Image 1 (cartoon, one colour):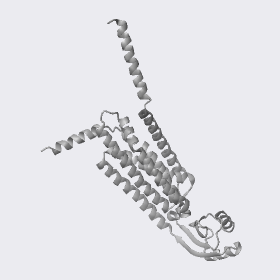
Image 2 (tube, rainbow, N blue to C red):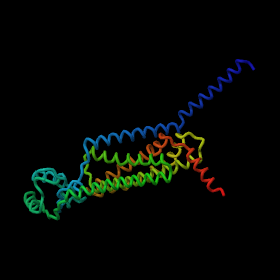
Image 3 (cartoon, rainbow, N blue to C red):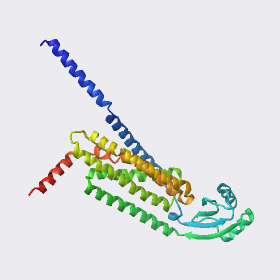
Length: 328
């Protein structure tokens, strides 16, 4: 065989290798991996922005945490909330927060501790005479700041205990790298929701705290699904690269995650629309948590283990150990 023929064959082989590499670089799996990594960087950016918002602006804590006065009254007719807000502002000095029922007939006024003019039944009767509204005072109470301090301590303790318990469970159930990914996804979901409330200045009360605790459970559920599928793929396809294994696991659970998130968001949207002012903070927090939780389950919980050295050999060795233990 001549030298030119060998060169021609080698050239064809090199060309074939180049074509295969080019196809591999533009394969759907490679494109999905790029999208997943882009989502990971987006999640990290959102965490940084949220941390900045919490550091510079802080949370707008409600009366449940800061203490203050809460007054409730009803009106015989439905009144526009903006109109009621303006008339109260013209007769009341200092900041206050006004909320109403869906029918705009049941009203709640919240004032911070140390307000210059505290609303009571006598003030409401005077306001009713001036405004011409048929107002019936319902209740006027003071929420002590000591209660607010206890709620902050108990809420923070609940978050810490939940995080530690989940870390221990996931380490036992899967592997410590997968546990780190799940915990980082959980931190992302909570931090971004808190940052959203900080940047927008939305009041943070007990209903929002309940939404944050619900987000923790939702995030854990998605992380367990991803982790279980990732473990299954690592056991079955050990000849694949770690990036392809992660992409395969995420793609196989993507439809399930999107359907679950979509149905959950529909329910939360109904609460947001029809629940009225008392449930608005809860609905906003939970809605944002589900949206950002879907992002973190796809881009964070599976990417972090890959970045810190997760590989299929761990599960191969574990399977061999189980086989050896089963031998007589």
